[in-house]
Image (tube, rainbow over all chains, first blue to last red):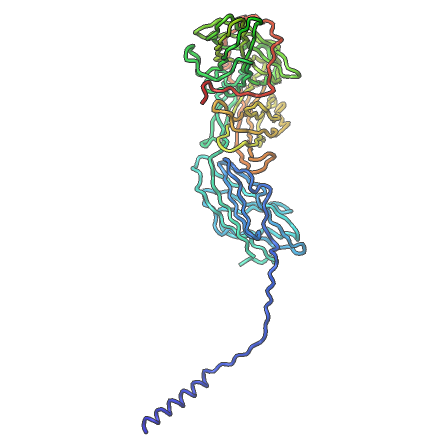
Length: 181
Length: 379
């Protein structure tokens, strides 16, 4: 009899708990329509891409399958070496302009001091220091516009040649001039 | 939207280096990696116009005009006591019963006289005929060829040669050359044989053309260029700064080993008239006996006052500034000598020995095809 009372009490308690932890879910319909488009800003090879470089090498410019990435290999020497028009930034959108920012994520070492990436816009040139990380707002590429990219390296005479190095960069484009995250 | 871009940089040793041409009157200081240079150019009223006059370690700046049977080499003459290397003309001229066979061969070098009034000129030479067999005669030829128009001798001299184990040194008076003009200095041999084959071995150890001018002058190489990897490269010079005296007249040119010369930088009466040269292809040299090119200065000034010219040598991997382009700084100081130095310089010179000039108008120097001298025995 004493056991029957205890069992009854447990049943009552568990029934009460099930009522206390119950949730109500309400469903509103929201539809997200994803419709990929061709990238409006693409890279293209410049006039000096894959042309002869110093010492019998080649100015190598490789583009990603959709022209949304690019990798460049160059072979500079002492003093100043300039690579003109090795990459092109194309705005294939003929209706909209985009703000372009260059972000240096991984900079070249200090013995490449003075090395620059230069964007030739329709209104002038903007330089980006390749030995410092950070963002540089280049400006607004007009609808259907085309900018070219140059590289300049300064290696002072009298020092050993610097070790090969990579600068990792991002080209960021946006419809607004807001600072990119 | 974020588009990744990477640049992989692989530095390389300078594929084009600057060198000291070792010319009398030029003091060159090269940068640690041979990618910059400073040159002090000593003007004089006695100017040597021939580069590499003694063939000492190379045939640089000299070109061959071989004959039908006679070849032209760069070689060391181990017998006659030459000063380093020589230009050697050797071969076998075939004999014939029916006719006299004549053959000739030459070495030549383009020179440019400075824009000055030339009051006198001398050509100093050292030569030796080591071998001449058979029923044959040999004649030396030294001269100055004027390539203008169809070409012709501005001046020349000839003389009979006999075999010898030692070198003969001579100085000739040169006439009929004027300032601000292109010429070729020429040295060679004419051999005639009858009946029997004639083996010929002739050495030219030294040739220098020296002019005396009223003004302080200089006309020669100040910096050599050599391609060490890749190429050809396409180069030009640009003036980036200058401090000149009003009496300075000066041309600066680039020339490659085939003797192709750029349009000059021009300074007239101390004023910059043309601030860059035209573009010149600088190829790899044809052999270790040559360098790829040179920077030449031709200047005249009346006063003993210094002028300085700051230049940039730019070379690119493609014509018209395409591909990769490199810039080297080059500074020139044009510095007339002190009076005492000039007196010592004059005193060291020798005089004319009065060798007669004989007729040689039939002999022509073919410069249509530029042929470098080859090292005898290869290598």
